[in-house]
Structures are given as structure tokens and as C-alpha cells.
Image 1 (spheres, rainbow, N blue to C red):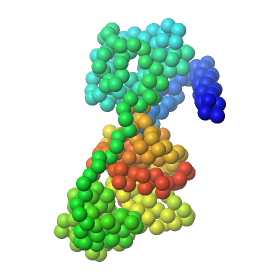
Image 2: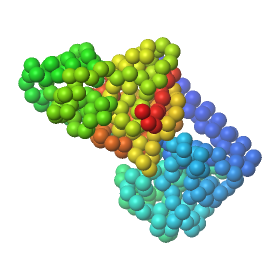
Image 3: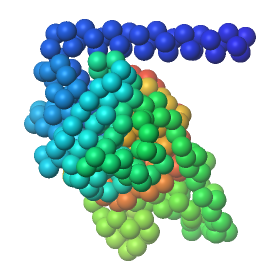
Image 4: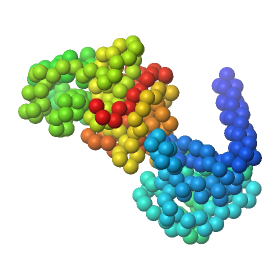
Length: 358
């Protein structure tokens, strides 16, 4: 049975690949091709006029339109990047850029390579790309990828690092005052029943941070004077919009808080970090379109556990570093202390509304 299942997966992949190749050839015949920009943590292909690989690379350098940018599409190519030469031999494309291609951080270079390979793959039967910079193979350009020989899209899609494991922390002994604080946070919707163990750890600190964000206090994650005063009189957060019954989520960009809602009542308010100014999370109404226990970012080559994508490559997901301010590529970062809970709360098709100011 295991062998049969493996064969079925291989056959399905072959059928999809053949279908994708047919689609690419049909688009070429119509004078349309697709180039890869980024939307959140993933590559997204958009149509452009043209037929040749050179047309495709020039469209990459030109970048997304203003409308596409407003919808969260981004590029890591810049106008300073010049195509020196592009040749295709069989399934191999050799692409030579000027030195500007090798500029910027490792993250930007990795994204750029991903965009290039995803754009050229299947165009004119191309399956491999040999990248050159000023005529030479750019060894060491991207960490974990050897550019000394041609690379494929499959290589970029294969994780080359282990799934991050949250650090094991030694929590302080149970404390009655901490337990009272946790009970109050449970009542207000920042912790959930069962979290009142009396130990002050990351989960309690994150709940306090969410409370401070919602109440527009200083974002410290500790119970200072203003926080203690507000805790005494605060009420449970309420949804920004009213709608029909069921589960949904609201992401409040200004407050950096996500509200998880059931039947118009906030079940839990969590602290998040959304897209930074250069890669913002686009406001709008969306729906969770998948639940992926272990997601992988192709351009940035990092694990995104407990992912709930809701538009393109933009998703709720776990991340080890969640600042108090917008810092992601467009996704909604959550600490490991809450990411699994959000994952199990959500369902495929769940409404998600991203709100700019509230």
C-alpha cells in the first residue's frame, strides 16, 4: 500500500507538471508570460505581455504595478540591475547580470534568486537556471545554495534546515499573585481557561503585551503601574465589525493585535507582528484557504510552522521573534505560545479581515 501511495503521488505530480507546461506554452502562444513577485512569504506569478525569457527578466526588473503593490505584491529586483546576457540551450537558461544583482542582504539575494528561477522555469521548456554575475558564477551569494552549477525550482522548495524548536525555559515557582493576574487575563480574553498555573512565563508576558496593545499602553510585556491600574477596570475586547455567527479573525494593524472571534464574542486577543512598512500586510477581507502544519518560505528559506494562509503567501504562522511593532514580510507572526492554539481554532474558509486603523 505504501508503494502504491508513493506511485500515486509521483503520478499526480507528473500530471500537474504536464498541465503547468501546457499552460505556459498556451500563454506564450498568446504573447503572455508570467513573472514571479512576492506576496508575503511566497512567490506569486502575475501576467505580463511578452514571449521570450528576456521579456520575462525585463518585466521582473520593472517590478509590480501600483495596483499590485497595494495588494501586497513585492519584488527584490531594482532598476539598477541590468541583464548582460541571456541564452537558452535545451532546458538550461544561462543568465548574466551586472554586479547590482549581488547587492543587499542575504535575505534579499535569496528572494531575488527565487524570483528569477520561478519566472524562467517552464518558459520555453526551461527547467534549470545557471546564474552569472559579471560573467562569473556567484559562489556564496545565497547561504545554503550552491550557484556553481545550474539550479532548479525544486532545489529552492526543499527545506535545508531543521524545523525550529522553541527553547525550553525554566519557569519560576508558582506564585499566588501571578495566578490572580492570569485569572484576570483569562476573564478578559487574553489567556484561555487552564492557563492559570501561577508561573510567570512567555505565555503570560505575551498576554500582557496583547492587553497593553489593545488598551494603547506602553508595550512592555510586564505589569507596570499603568497596566495594573487598567487591568482593574478593563473589559473584554469587542470585535470591530459585527457579522453573522461563527468563527472569524480580525487583524488590527494599528494596534498589532489579532482578535479571534466566535459568534461576535472575542475568544482570545493575541499580540502579533504584521508586515513592516516596505512589505505591509494589505487591508481587506479574506478567508483562510489552507492549514499547513509545516510551511516553508521558498524565497526566504525559513520554516513557518502552524501556518494559516489567507491571501497569497500571507498567513498567520509561528515565529521565534515577534517584535512589538510591524516587522514581517507581510505575514502575521505569533509566538509559539499561541500559534498552535490559533491553528486549531481556525478552519479552512474562516473569514479574516485585516483592518488598517481601529
